[in-house]
Length: 521
Figure 1 (cartoon, rainbow, N blue to C red):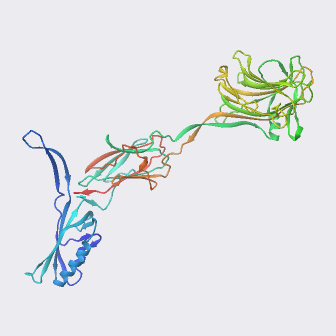
Figure 2 (cartoon, helix red, strand yellow):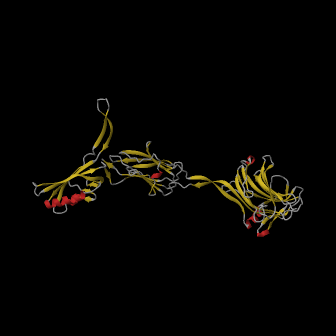
Figure 3 (cartoon, rainbow, N blue to C red):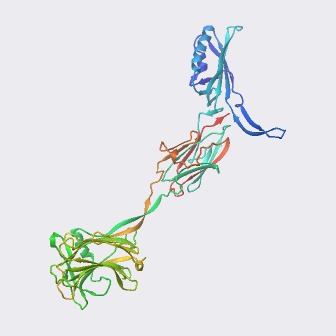
């Protein structure tokens, strides 16, 4: 090949030789057809004929370059010195020839470069010969081949098969296998990427079982009558004298008012009303509001309240009831606080439905309705209590403890209303302080969809460099997230199909780009 440029490690050797008091005339390059083919065999044991083929490899390719110099001895010596310095490298460098300016060889000088002078020419000439080793055995195109999901090119196409499945058809015009660089830019959240060439060649990162949206069980406060204004609002919005309780021992036709003892408002009984039942008084009812899903009723709930139950004299009596009922008006569970005899002895009962229209007392607690903390959990400074329901399990509070009970009769029956009743017993003197101070109702286990943080956010870029065996997510190493069977793979000369998978729930297709450099042996 005559007059062709040779560029090694970025230096144009042809131009180098034309500097000074001489010039270069022709350039001769011998690239050979291919690298050395090395076939490996083994004997076939006792069989006489031939050997068994094992495998073939390509060893180091050699390229020989010759320059003819025209000049004098000083010129030849300067060229030899300069060239010797240029060739003194400790690792392969790029080698490019003018006839194939886009093909790059990674080469290193091999053996003894020579400069031979021919004195029989006029003017005298010299021949410089350099042999380069190409350890990789192939040259590589400087320009990248590109296939994109944005459109088809001469190098192939990437087409959508279905949601989360894309097929890439790659056309490698080189003569050797090469390694692609696969890049995905995500336009919506995604949890997993699988790149499959064959049953034994695949690359996988992320979690194929990851979801974009999941379900969580939240809690929502649906009734909040906790502040000074809150308990007054609670009384105002309640339904009066329609309460349903554990039995029919009471008549509800009395009235309530707001008492402000100790500088805070309380719901108190103003008039106990009339009737011939054991208990006479008034009731209020709150319907449990719908939750944020628009659902009514609950199997999982919690309510907290504050009540005062404190006698001013030993002959006073009174009853305070809190009950939870279903949408069918069935009593489900509740508590009652009462004093029905002379003295200070009082009771606090845990109640539940018996499934037959009646009720049973789960447990009866005793206390003294005085001002003393150790005797009365419902004195003025305290009075807090709560109940937690988990379908058929009820947890009550009592003096710092949380006894639990399983009530099969209420399993699957949703709570619909909260009822509170304050009653006197017959016409006996009523407790001086029998109030409801605060009330909060919380519905639990409300199913809500949640946006799960995914491995690949919208805007994330995944790059799989098969040649280097590197995986980057947003320019950060992520090889530790690969599945254990993931291995880099190549594409051969000609046409190759690759399947690319993402999470099936991905809402917007990613932009996919596959690039490679063609290789030539």
